[in-house]
Length: 136
Image 1 (tube, rainbow, N blue to C red):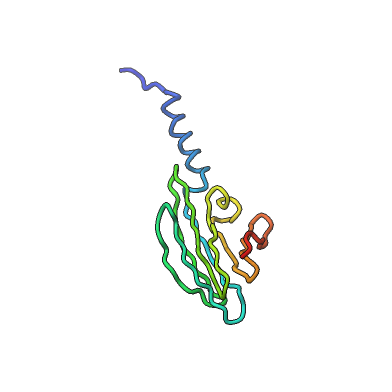
Image 2: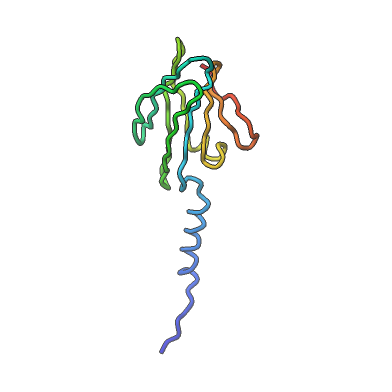
């Protein structure tokens, strides 16, 4: 009877694969929040979509409310979500999620966008505060 031989390659490949999968932040899901902080009785009209995945449809976010969605990113793919937003005479398209830009800065894989009258603010985990990213 031949004793079982330990083959380093047999053990190393699964370990390397496990390290890659566990260290890749996009294996988990993400969540994006749009918060209407326009004040007063100002509603925010939004239409969000991903060119790669799907159309999330149009909706109206009431003052102080939010709209949010969840999604996962498969290894080897990327994700982007854009939203057409408007109130009063202001209207613009914003890139509210880009994996390469936002995966690390959003924190806990949740991106919080606060929509104000002067633009969009993203909560940046590293500085523990909202920072303006886009103007109208």
